[in-house]
Image (cartoon, rainbow, N blue to C red; front, side, top):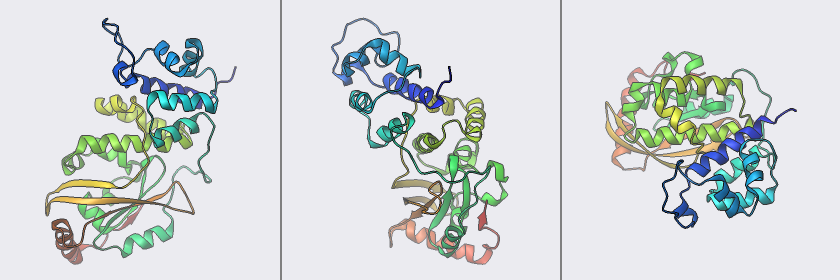
Length: 289
């Protein structure tokens, strides 16, 4: 019998959420006995969701579909946020996300590159499918790294976060940012959780980095949103930047990400200093993957 691979991913997500929910948090009385596994047992989830243990077990095993009613109950049981609920419903085939014609490698929309090139005090990137880095501007290269020197097939944000020692040092809160990057990658994967390029990336990084392997199996998900980016730049020192994300209407799988600074702040002044240095030697730093 043909199995739906999305149901396997749905089951893995439910298993990951179950492992991260303690009996105390779920409002279950303690038995006083040591637990062999972290989180809730399957029968405990089933009891809280008012469904049979056999049915819930088959959900985790990817053997049966689930109704929206059951999924919404599980959302409550696992205390899922809006992003996690969207991910759950998409894997279950209850909602869809827009997709466009696929190719082996995306190319940044020209208008996004034009916009990037006009930004001088703002670092900007175009992030594509599977967190591939499709385009950037001079300030982004100056703040992070010269992406043009990285082979095209390796220009992937998550890959760089875990494999580039310079970026590990650049982020003052590297662990938090690495886990957030993984949650973005996992959320993006709901469009096609079995994309061969995604599978290759996950297998490679799982073999290289035990932290990646551990965090990926936790199945955390999140949409890209605003928030602070804390850097320790080798030239201009500590920076606090605000991230904003904009989805491209022509290709929803491309997102423009910009890092801005509050006018008059220390970070803003540091960016002006960096920009003045770029004015003498910025040729060749702009790029499109």
